[in-house]
Length: 173
Image (cartoon, rainbow, N blue to C red):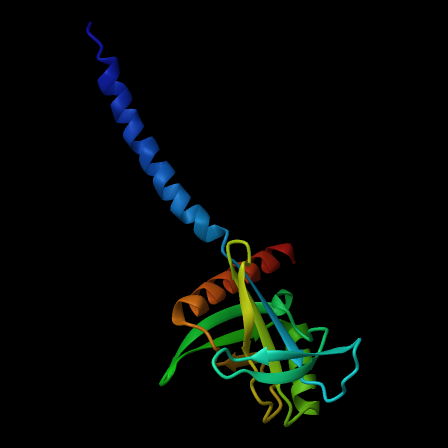
């Protein structure tokens, strides 16, 4: 019986190479993370509890905010990228605790702003202040939508990372 070892090894090498190449691409997506911190505008200039941050890159608007965020990615259960006439927006849905917090702060602070800080990427290397939407009414449904000062690609990375973090949070509960 004759046996061709080289041909046999080549047949095994091809599937292994495909798994390694495809596995690396999906593995990189699995590492995609994001952070989202929502702060409330503060009218007091207390050095310990507030800070002034620039929102928008082209023509920065300075907003004085409470240093501690009222909501974070730990409260997020879903994130979506929405198509809008001017581009795209991010919609974030919060868990029960986050929805109560959002309702409480939006009802008691009309006329103020939320300041939204986002980080994204494999090691959260990209990040900046994305938006400062005006609070015009109380938000009772636990969903916050905002237009961010970011490109579509950056927002796609942010939303992808937030979805991954939300999935990890759901597994932990």
